[in-house]
Length: 196
Image 1: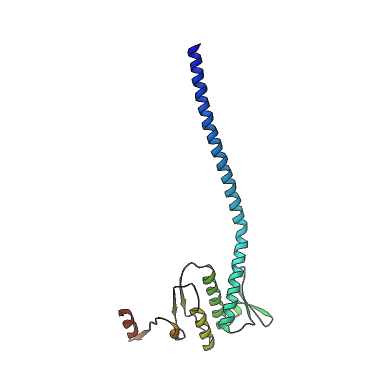
Image 2 (image 1 turned 45 degrees about the horizontal axis):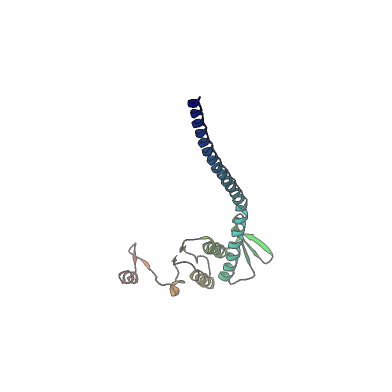
């Protein structure tokens, strides 16, 4: 009986250890379940907030683009709107026109205004490239657009590729490509700049 009692006491001690381990696992499980519930709540909140965040960002970009468009076109009466479905609309003189209905110059200025606003508000990249940004614009609007592009804050470098010389007076470096006998070559200014 003593031997049997010792065995039973040993078994009881082992079962107490198992119970303690189970209690620890149950506490960990409860913590994991709480964390899982929190994660589910956060996921649901982010999923529900996503469209609202997008709407707020689109509205912010639209406001910036409207101001940039007014500066480029020197016209504060027109209102540029970047819509929730990412279309560009221009409200002027009591009517609203979609992007396809705008003139070439209006389209260029509107598209650049939205792009600049996007770069300002959403981009973590500090380099911007502009290819022929002054196409379809008259001289005054080219100058206004050049001033807007060159006054963008938060970019370490801006690259502008253009056939006109609107940007030259305000740039740090101008690279001229000329064609001689069917071959494109960098002008001597580039060679001096590249060597120096």
